[in-house]
Structure formats: C-alpha cells, structure tokens
Length: 474
Image 1: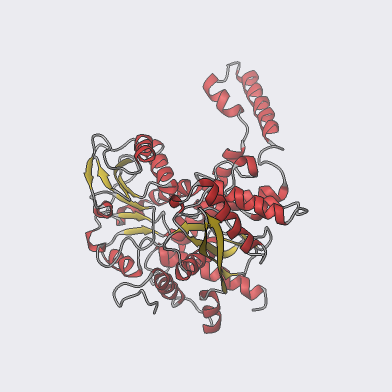
Image 2: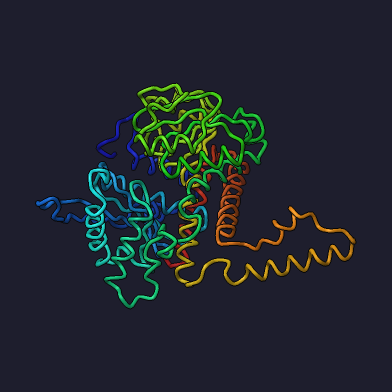
C-alpha cells in the first residue's frame, strides 16, 4: 500500500488501483495480462537548474508512461507544488483507461513539474518550461509519434506554445512538429474548441445521463436538466466552462461555487461570467456581492444541491466527508476527486456517479482532433464548408419552387451555414460522449454483477487494452 494511504483512506494512486481491481475481478483475464495492464511502464524523473533572480533554482519534473499498447501516448503536463511520482503515475493510468473508453487511439501518459507557477514572472516561467521541455524532448518523451502532452492544472495554451516552439528548435526539419503537443493557441496550430473541451465534455456527459429516464429516477432526481441545482467545486478552466454551458444552455442553476479562498452560495443562482470576472479581479470568490460566504471552501462539497461537480483536485471527497454529501448525482470533472472509500460509501447511499475517466474525456478527445489536424496540415471544414452551403441553397431553392412559398428567413440563415471547425469539433465530441455513455450503460444494465458506471467504464477500457495487447502478440 502507498505510504500516504491508511486502512480507511487509500491514496490517489491506490484508489485507481483498487477501482481497477474491482472491475478486473469481474473479467476473465489471465493474471499476467491483468498485471501488465495495471502497472505503469516507466517514469522518468528529471532535476534541472535554472538561473533566476541571481541564483540557480533546482526543479523536479516527471513524465510517466503507463501503457504503450497504442502510440503515441497522451497526457497533460501539470504545474503544481505537490506533484510527485505517485500522482503522475496514477494520472497516467487514468489516461490509458480514458483513451480506451472513448476510443481515442492513444496510450496513457502524464507529466508534472513541482512548481507553483504563481510565484514566477512570465519570462521566468517560460525559461523554466523550456528547460523542462528540453529535458523531455531530448529523450523522445515529447514527440508527435511517441509522446504528446497537453495542458493540465497550472498550464494552458501559453505553456504548450512554448513547448511546441522548443521542440521545433530542436527538430528543425520535422514537418509534423506542431503535433508534438496539443492545447496550443490557434495561431500556433491549435484547434477551435480545445480550451472549452473538458468543460464541454462534462456538459455532454451530464446530458447523456439525463437522457436515460431510468438512470435519473434511480438517482432520486426529477427528469430534465432545467432548473437543477448545481454546485461547482473549482472555477478553473474546466469548472468555469462546465458551469457556463450547463447554466446558459441547459437551464441549470449554479447555487454554490467553491474556490481556494472559500465558497459562496446563492439559492437563485449565479451568473458565472460575473463570478469569473470577480475571481480574476480579486483572486478569489470572497466579497462577491449578494452571496453567502464561508471561509472553508470544502463545504461546497457538502452543500444541498442536485448535482455536485468537483472540478479541481483529486481526493476531495473522502471517507471523512462522503456521508455529508447531499447531491444525488456527482459528475467527476476533476481526475480522481473521490477516493475509493468515498466511492464505496456514496454508491451504498444510492448516489449516482459519472466517473472521471468518462466525464472529463472531452479534453483528450479534442486533443486527438487537434493532433489529426496538425498531421493533415489542413483546418477542419476547409474542404467541405462552402460545398455544404451550396447544396443547402439548392435544396431551399427547390423547395420554394415546388411549394411556391418562401422558406422562413430565420431558418434559411441557419440552414445555409456550412460546418465550421468549431461545429465539427463539437459534433465529434458529442458523438464520442454519447457513444461511450451508451457502451458503459449497456454493460451496467446487462450484467447484474456490474454495480455502477465506473465499474463498467473500467471493464470496457481494460477489455480494449487487453484486445490491443493480444493483437500485438503479448
């Protein structure tokens, strides 16, 4: 057992392994293959120095490869003070299972740098990032055909642009250099919809759940997303977009928001844009007008609501506070927000859980689209958009001639618009999330020994990895 585990509270890494074993026990797998799928293949640890503010500062970073059953391997790079090998390896394992579940043809990887990015100026952070990238690139731990990072906690488009530029400087003749990382700015080979992708995937996964009347009823909820009371824990990129889409497009009420400096509550709901602006201006949620404030942000997890969306760190719902959770549905926007002990307790309470490896798969799905775009060297929609518009115009003209009536103007404008890159990205992501939910749900409902969506998700992912290894002769 991991040193940070206790008999009641397993660590993040142990929680991933426990959930894996719970699912694998329901499958007919040889023990050797089962162990091969579970363990992490390799982790590279680098310690490098950068001269900053007149002295050398030493930083520790990691890049872990969990499974190479498909290549390249895929997984974000996070910048956070508490990053360590166990965390990176657990996240890499989740990436393997996540990619297999949503049928993205990547293996699982993850990276991390033990740093608080808020302590450094932008030019200092660029020098640190480029040096970290250099250490990984020269060992092919960043490479379009072998290992493709993406943003994670503490990183974003800016850091990915620096890494991509560093790779290009070291591989000046690689025509596919842009594909070495995803999550880049559009001006540097990124794709429309990548910034919103994980939050958009959280929205689509929640919509999938509410399309199934039986699932909603068993969770003790009324049908339909409209009016549902939602609490978001963590208003970073993922939490912000998930809250924005669920409130503005699906009619949910965001009644609680938890952040580093505390939590705010308002029964009639928040304007996410207003809270976001306040957060950017002040650095926290404290002082937001018209809201009830508590200093302990973790209390957001225990608030009275229909849907709880933990969108920040792993291990925030534990054996200690799981009994206090009042939500009837938990959508895991973060990686591993529930420990294995909390997951078991909440299942016994009848709380429905949309698991992390599915709920937050929007990021890697759209990263896959970006990687394909970079390899094909053409923007999505460029070849077909105007042709689609021309065909639609011909159809409308034919209908008007046949009926003798003009097509409604508001419908004409919408119908004549061909598919842009963002339209195609959202369509592909929606299709991916619907397909994966259907796969999980079918297994869950078909087999009485499969207790929940998480177990079904693991079983599907493990089965696909096993099939891949079998085809390789392993």
